[in-house]
Length: 428
Image (cartoon, rainbow, N blue to C red; front, side, top):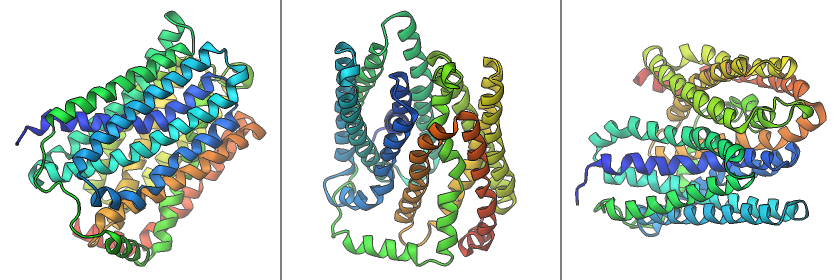
């Protein structure tokens, strides 16, 4: 059964993009809106990165058992169940009027998000694997940009448009936190619809079947080849530390923007946050991605890495200014958009770096290992950030985070000594 990939590639990558942003960003916003302290939020939501760190270890199971089509349909159905269950938990929390149930709600909802994170990581594996099986090499090349765009659209909708709509509902239609019940419930129904649609529309590629041989040998060889490649220490340090400053800021920034001014934060409404950070900000990231990709293609990694590192680190000073001056909404929007544009540029450099060091017989596995290490580099700082902010306050925290982010400039020179980068640059 041959079907036009336009019928399913955009929807597959919309469905892949939503869970990551909901679990790692929107969960923070939800807990902040319910009044939980920053230290508690960042410590425990930081653990939600763990499935993306570990997915390299169970990806062989997806290859060895059943088909990619069944895995992704099962993951979409499971994601629907998780989101509907979370909506039910928030509703129960609202009906029972919280304070007495706050701790139990936090634990149960965090378990829900954690299960969702494992489902999401599995959906990533299955969807990307299905993409390689369902499309010809020519189609894969054509749709690689399309799938990225729809993945980003999901992130814009999930953390921007839908969060803004949730803020509007909470202000004008229903009392908070019932607006979050609607948010999670609508996404749960969306995933149920995705599973039903893809069940009907997805082709069944002839090659989509369990692996013919056990994956243990391939798993051992792929890890062995990756961790014995030349300059592996430099590679690991670069992947872990390139985004260290940004990792400290990632979960604190939404809380700083949304929490009350009495706590030293900016007190922006949820509706305005969704417009600024989720829509303008993520639009700027996409623009940065596009420009970064063009510059890297034209000038190469080594010529671009220093200016891209500057674009990643220096905008961290914007948060020092925001915490100190607390300017109006227009200035906040302008600075956040500019900061996200720089982040979009810088992330392209890291993406290309990971591609360059993920070569050889097991390059797909190597890419998974590299992205797992990258997730670990985000997980640990994000877990520590809440405690740091609670002790230091927002302004001093942002000063410390900026100072720590200068470590990026210390690890950039390592890239110039990595043989895999030299070899890749020559091939390009």
